[in-house]
Image (cartoon, rainbow, N blue to C red; front, side, top):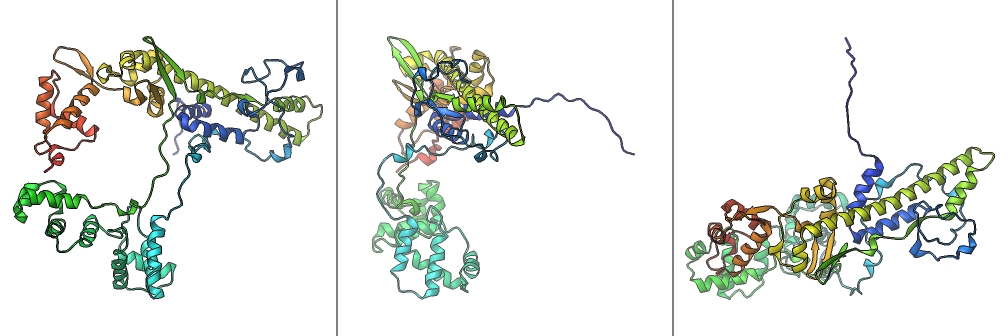
Length: 490
């Protein structure tokens, strides 16, 4: 028997506008221009005043200054002639969600510098293949192998998969041995080590291209062939015993191996796209008084198109409204509402950014005055969230992707947040201060006898920081510093 019952549930749900504001809030300044351009292209009722020519107020003697949804003080020129038939089939509902996640490159960023014409890694290998006297079958096999290499220059796919690809895509029936033979040919190409299947094979290919009579090269080959695990783990004492080497010979062998390229694929590639950091905030020091300003790119001059407002008033006041006219009114109203919402969202974004950054600046005032890491106070997201009466997730979205420029450098806001550590005197200090001390001692250590975590713990305790060894290990890993054994040098 079917049982039916009624239940009441209390759920919290975000509106589509709230979701899109959250996404807009976390967009960094470097991507905001792109996001605004996308909205301008999608919504003809939205205009960027900085791109339009201002017109004299006399042209609109009866204009009500409150007509603009965005309450802007400026007016742009008349929009182009509008044909409702061109837009009736466009988005009938707000579709902000499909564009907030796009972070395309600004056209300005694409004009950074002239780029020299050069051959890519694959094109370079293909050119070398073209110079060989090969049968059609071997040429197609070589072409398939080259096309299967990854960005590091390795062949990660098994030979059997290559033979299957040749049969299905190129109608070439090849044996595994034929593919193996062609692979060895390609492994002779430049850069050395290309088309290797493992790191060990990559290093051996490069070593075997060197002087075969050099005793250091011979011993380096023995190390890579038989003792690669000990080498990567820096068990140098085991290598000395296994190969009967003294410390000078081992040092020469290790240096020979370290000169090899473990990723031959990117040796001919040039990274022409440089990461550009555009600060979202600027903090200046005016005789001991900090002044916070928001990057001007975060405050675009957006307004609602006057022609669209007049169009809506004209359609809305029409005495007879057929189906087509009702669709036109609905379309224009939707675009006007979307433009108003976007302008309000941009303004709310500005206010949230300034409010959050001002709280961070006041909390870390001493650091922004001096630039000394030791003046950083312990600060977590909740501290700022409580101060500005906002949710922790809002503070997190602001801090994770925004930068501030100061006279001491440009910093990611996230870097100002840290846990508290209590000293022997009972004072709470930032864990960044402890990390700074660890970094200084590790940088000055004797690399032949690097400091173990236990020794670093003792050093910190002597300095008044009573923390456990596992905490030292955690901080060391957060700074991407390997364990003492892997920091050892000959």
